Length: 325
Image: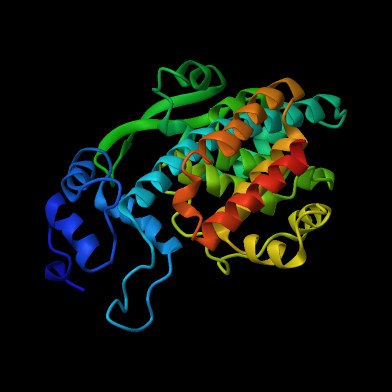
């Protein structure tokens, strides 16, 4: 593929493309309004990405065009996705916070650890994490902590031909390190500590799926662009949890948990139930139920004919109400 295969197009031409090449209809807004939406609200790539949730005509004059796909359906899916991302970020921050609280509590109760030695061995084994801390040593948010617990010197980097901050020594406790690491690096520390103790509270595979979801939302990636089955395999622990839910059958479990986006969301819900404090959980789950029971249902009529979207929504709603009442 070269540049001429995907030339730059204006929003009006892109709206025409959706109509002529993709079979998208414009029942609820005009094509001119759709063009303005693509120009001012959401770009073509993101808006059109949700079409993967629709089937195409396999033969006849409409072969290759989408079945019963209106531009307003794409708009609505984009809006729902935005609300989901915003809530997921908050829930993942809650999870990260309480995983750190739990680890520090376990460390405090661990008579074999002083809180410093484990950091020494962990950072010595993970120099790339030290480099990430170096990179934020001038940050207004973490710089003071780093300079208090790490010895930072200005060193000349011959390869980059400039001076940069280098950590040459450290005497850092675990409770400070927690404030300096990304969620991904914290997971490495989490795995390291509990691996030494031989008892990991939350399966690392499941936490990594939560991290994947969090990262996607943090980078504002579209989450529900492809709800089709077959893109993932659920950890056995997640499968067992869903298996206990009487209103979800084997076929539903198999299909829905094999969709990566659905699986990551379910993993987040299961971890949330297990680790987040009751007070925070109560308010956040109220927000989650309001999103699924009210906002997502607002334009339910748009998707009545789309079995994939309807069944996925129903599955997620069942899981939410089974987990949280």
